[in-house]
Length: 373
Image (cartoon, rainbow, N blue to C red; front, side, top):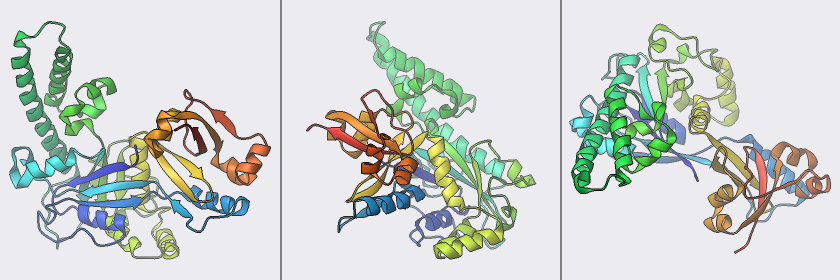
């Protein structure tokens, strides 16, 4: 996995485009006070905040020196601002089919629901809890439609097939998925990964992991950086472990400030870090992602992998040739790398470990790969 791809989904006028603009720190998505402002999805690339990169740069600069074209390259998250869904989207209401097709392409979904008060902005939903249910139901209903069509097609095709035709196993999995959706269950929460893999080509929307962002008033977040004490409206939508309370308006204001000014502003409102940083962290946690690092005179860089990736797979994120020709990898925890003063000193101290094809690359490792072409 070279980067995380996240879709921002919500009813019209819940603050999706405002949140998206804050992520990009510039106005690229048009934010206006009427439904369907966003018809074509806006895609933006956001750097993943990672203080380890700065520490590695300083270490390499002292130990080896930096090349003229030296770069620091963080991991990235691609966000797509998907136009507002409405009830009936699965049947094509409000350009629903077009919008839902954009969601199929992302790795994870961020459902944005409204819990801020502003009489000047038209409210298309009713409450955070009800709005979330509408969004999830529309995606589930679209999946149900997809499964019914494909199951009918398989049944026709298998009439003359043998009993051991491998498609029968896929049909069984589709029928199990259909039953779960009819019960209102989100497939990514209840189906085994192996079963979801069998029906991957269907690109089912509920097979994706999701988060919930409650777009709240700034006053509701004060002093609650780790997760607010839930107010009446917020508690109704809270889902343990995947709900974040963010003020899109506050995030947009922060994006216009310098780093120093943003830190001071956060202190004033009682927050430890921007909601957008928490959103990216939660996305990595949700999708079980990790970051390893490479460090040398030409660049310091962060690479995104799945937790549990073996060394050849991690090498393949850089280039497929690295995976095919993988021989071994030298690894060290980034803290040790910094404390000891770079590769040469770390090797002299015997702290660099050589790992092979069956060993994992873990989050925070600094890695040098050896491979043959």
